[in-house]
Image (cartoon, rainbow, N blue to C red; front, side, top):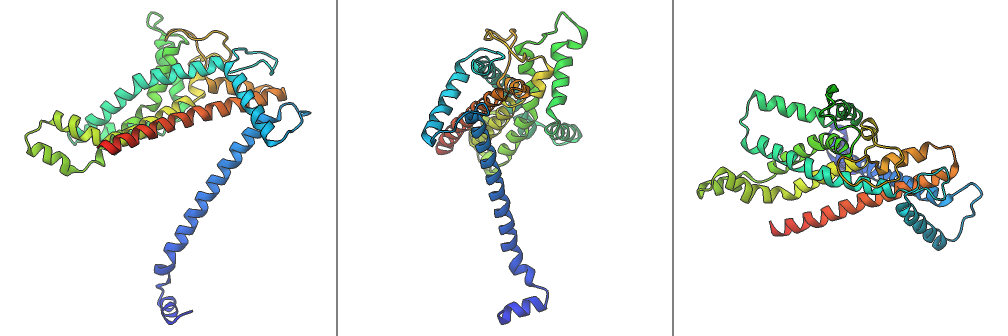
Length: 316
């Protein structure tokens, strides 16, 4: 130990030198452990999708990859909901999830972004704004099953008013998931707007721009990458939810594709949950294949969002 190190240790100043590196090592260990756990989880899902029945033989790696690709294609193209795992599939669930994703984006994203812009750029500081802000932050942490109960009472049953009740339709599921992701989109929109330098607003106002011109022409384009991140996080949560859809009446098995917002529907997570509960070992393979399809959809969404976000960052 050097003279400086002995002096630091003697006077109790050792933590100034060593606390930072120790904290960095702890953070690195936490990151590595998280990556390892995710890799093990994904590997176990792939292994379950390749395993098949208990007496199914294992092949070489190339044969396993080919078999996995064939399994995913069959599951994505089959509309059967059968007691035979060899003909069961997820086509109806995939189409239903795409319906949900598209309609939730149309309903939830404009409302959430508009609410975030109003609270951050237009609303005056005060008790009302603080009350709304606190409740939005609290709603972001509410369990999804609570939104399912709300959707059941508000949209499916309409508090007993049959004339306006939607029943277990696709539109009821869309509105329920829109409520679920709304606090996330509002909060991330506000954070993205706060990240825009205040000098940009002051320069535009100094040149004679109105509040609308400042927000629409300067602030929103600069905050768009952050807003895109928030919307993708919200949509990713919505597409993977099961509990609220079960509460509002998503069908566990459906043979007909939905043709409109008022049709009955099912979703990919609901079908995965249904197959995972069945005792037949073959259905565990089907459920694992459905999980891989869901993961592929999420990765595709995130990749598209990253491309759009990087493009806007380059322009603004």
